[in-house]
Length: 170
Figure 1 (cartoon, rainbow, N blue to C red):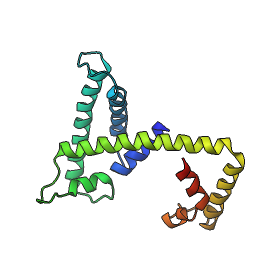
Figure 2: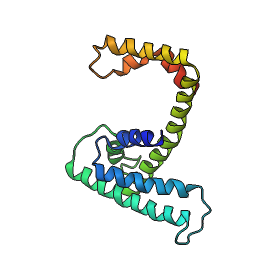
Figure 3: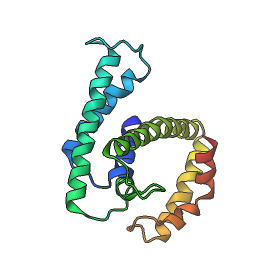
């Protein structure tokens, strides 16, 4: 679930992202996460020290991604595009450090809370086979009403009332 939620977070933040960046972000983010709750001893070899080094590396990777995005001048509908175009009340754009902090914060929140919620949803569904079958039937019906080939629309997912209740009970 942690890996899945990381992938979803990356997709929401960056849209399409080159595999080398995704791998480096994942590797360094994992190190930061491990050191997040460790005793803050800034000595080489400690989890905290490794996390601080990995955090600097994350900033460097994010700066590269931001630089590439600025050069391309493409208009994407992802979080990074919104952060790059955001202006405060004085008309100033966010700095690259502020953007990096926001991206890392979103990754942290997305991975922690999403993975936890997905784990509980799967547990509830595996504990109640009748509920699982009913949820699957609801989803199958809506998927088939869509021709069974196209991705579901947002409106179609909103018609999954049982699925919705299961998700919000987690």
